[in-house]
Image (cartoon, rainbow, N blue to C red; front, side):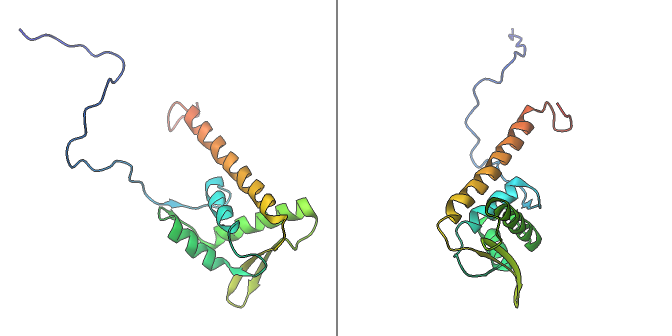
Length: 151
């Protein structure tokens, strides 16, 4: 006689994956969007590391982002929007426009970041603010009951 088994709550321990089972963590590319903190954080993190005191082409920043984050697609518009937001934040904090300059150069739009000691702590705070916004979005997502429901 066969013993009848009933389902009980909880999944229990998992078996070892079958030989040859591919990883399930493959994901489609993420298209960077203006106003998205996940996109902005990646842009700010790169801008924090570019050479100071000389204009850098927005297109070069886009190329570096796309080659660094292979699962993302960045456009010049997204990078320019982040740079313009940084410029506005700089003007609010320091009341001058010399810190972050977004301009049109002969080869396209450029970003220039002032070469002073006050830039690094300031840009770190900008990145921290974007990272906090990312964590808040993730926390909000995790509180939802269903993908299509608001709570």
